[in-house]
Amino acid sequence: AKAMGRNAYSFFTKEMNIVMTRRFEIEGQLHGALERNEFEVYYQPQLNVKDGSIMGAEALLRWRNPMLGNVTPDEFIPIAEQTGLIVPIGKYVIEQSLSFLSEWQTASQQDYMIAVNLSPRQFRDNDLIEFIKKALSDTNINPDHLEFEITEGVLMIGKSYIDEALLELHKLGIKLSMDDFGTGYSSLSYLRQYAFDVLKIDRSFINGITLKKEDCDLVKATIAMAHSLGLVVVAEGVEMREQLTLLEDLGCDYVQGYYFSKPIPARELLEFKHTKNS
Ligand code: C2E
Ligand code: CA
Ligand code: CA
Ligand code: CA
Picture 1 (tube, rainbow, N blue to C red):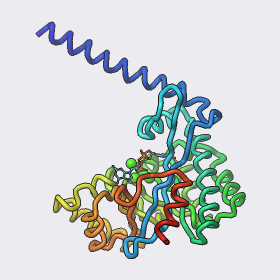
Picture 2: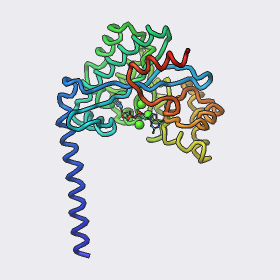
Picture 3: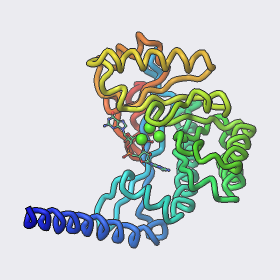
């Protein structure tokens, strides 16, 4: 038993060592990644359930580093948040997304939307609102075509600077979207308290929607609740035709997922639209 315990211990430290080395490497490479131009913003289309037309796209960051290869956002975003590097990186995403949106709208003559993820740490940046205002005016984008996706985690921090920033964004006419809905704590009060426009149902519920009655019931109730509060609903992670059909029956407004498209580079999205229309 003693030997086994020791083995378990050394195994544990070895695992921890790997995790910490990886973290250390990512953090090291993350510094300067912006300057070295290693980021690219990808876009995943969001479609109208009723007619399949494109409503807009969500901006999703990609990082390719010469030493580490492709690092997924799930791995580097938390580290960017902890180190504060998400502030300049997040600004880059906003700039890129708005300049892409301007190009996309011009090329297509459509009123597309762009949705950008905003993490908690970015709210601590005093310059955030001014930066967004300037980015909007530089690109000539109407504020109501920009949407920020925020998770419940942000609201649970309970800081007044967050409330003030959200109010400020709302006053500018920017849309607020509650991301990953259903994965955190009771959020109904937040939806009321803050002026959210959009509710995104988390992928984990959409996954089982055609298989588990509970998931289907939950999604159905969520859509009804969102609509009664005046929000529109986006279902994320739609991978199958059957999920789309069911979501349509349940009155879901918009869908996003691999069934339609993975997140793709700007160039491809510009073409994606044209091929769908022709
Ligand atoms: P999220 O905001 O919930 O984004 C949705 C994630 O689901 C994306 O992963 C997307 O590629 C993936 N996805 C979309 N459709 C499907 C589908 O049908 N099936 C499956 N299995 N997955 C699907 P991604 O791009 O790896 O991003 C992961 C997370 O990293 C995001 O989750 C978001 O929290 C964060 N993130 C990504 N880009 C940014 C960014 O620019 N800023 C911030 N703050 N966070 C970001
Ligand atoms: Ca999101
Ligand atoms: Ca999400
Ligand atoms: Ca997520």
